[in-house]
Image (tube, rainbow, N blue to C red; front, side, top):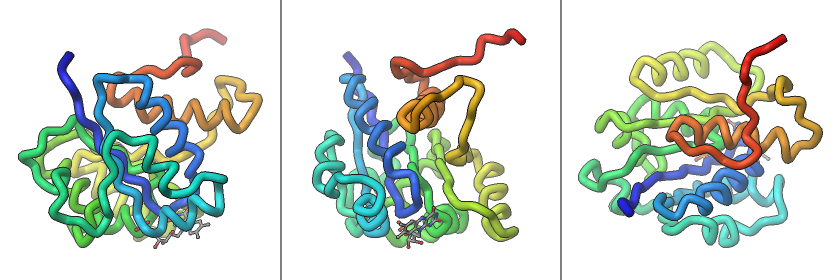
Amino acid sequence: MQTKRIIVGVSGASGMPVAVHLLEALRTFPEWETHLILSKGAERTLRHETDLTPDALRALADFSHDPEDTGAAVASGTFRTEGMIVVPCSMKSLAGIACGYADNLLLRAADVCLKERRTLVLAARETPLHAGQLANMRRLALMGAVIMPLMLSFYSRPRTLEDMTRHMAGKILDVFGLEIPGFARWGGGE
Ligand SMILES: Cc1cc2nc3c(=O)[nH]c(=O)nc-3n(C[C@H](O)[C@H](O)[C@H](O)COP(=O)(O)O)c2cc1C
């Protein structure tokens, strides 16, 4: 079984339950090795939005990296990965990635994915958005990143927040060809 590596960056935007669901889902794919980078901002948001401690979130990943350690393995393009997900992606981290301002490990790892032409999914979260934030997203889309804002969808008839969260995590993992149980696909029809 060939191990595949994926980097999960969690930054300080709202949306921690999606990050938790996504990390839990990744654990069900044993051939995928997860590398988590939890920003300082994310630790604070995590406390606001869930009952999990940062250590409990870190325990969901195979490897957890200090966001200040820009010398970690994932900071180098020679460390092969399938790509990176930033979920949720704050406007600050999005701006840093858009400009190549790689002053922490999350930003550096995303920068590496762009330069190595690897898949980079940014689950951006803010509302409303100003022109600078929209320009950063456009810039990133032109650089090859997948901009996947955390957005509500109703066509799968979600009944609970858990349903909505699973659907969003499923959309993100679908980019990497990973399908999680209960992910509702549209099959056409009226
Ligand atoms: C409860 C809470 C919710 C936040 N939600 C958002 C958000 O949805 N989007 C955003 O861009 N920033 C949000 N922020 C602000 C970021 O956490 C802040 O800009 C932080 O510096 C981001 O740094 P990081 O990207 O390195 O984690 C929130 C902060 C808190 C405390």
